[in-house]
Image (cartoon, rainbow, N blue to C red; front, side, top):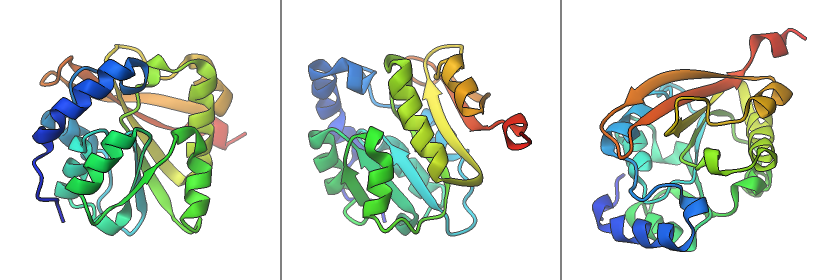
Amino acid sequence: MLGTHDISTHDKTFFWQWLRNPKEIGAVFPSSTSLARTMAAQVPVSGNETVIELGAGTGVITKALLQAGICSNQLLIVEKNPSMTNALCQSFPGLRIIQEDVTRLSRVIRGEGGQHKIKTIVSGLPMLLFDSRKQYVILRQAFSLLAFGGSFIQFTYGPTPPVSRQVLARLGIQATRVAFVWHNTPPAVVWRLEVSPRAITR
């Protein structure tokens, strides 16, 4: 069930958190509704698989996932920023929301019992601002948790994949551009990351 708070009431929180730590937030404004819906459209609704959202921020994508038909008990939110975590808990009191650094994602899942079948990870992380080492740590853990055929959905503001080609090659991951969203500030590109068929057949 969606919370009673309007997500837009948290825009000021987002802005001030960006001022305090722009390398962790990555954008001056929260994702637009158009971008959030486009991200949510990449997530299969059928089945009981867990959907993980990384870097939920003010919850714009969270709201879109719920509106797209993802059940609240399927969602697991991981957000590092304490202020944004508190805002998310107020807006979505029925969701599992964990305040933790995404580089400890495996530990988060173990803390949840480790019994989740995870088909999709949706990311609002500013991957372009992370160095190759941090990208590798995050994606190595993410793909070790994803079920066979699972995908990692990421948006970015540039024309190239949001993850360095070296990291993609090292992990055997392919990046596919699935959508371009003009109605966002700035315009955004949505990418699907998944295990390369060549990596599977090795």
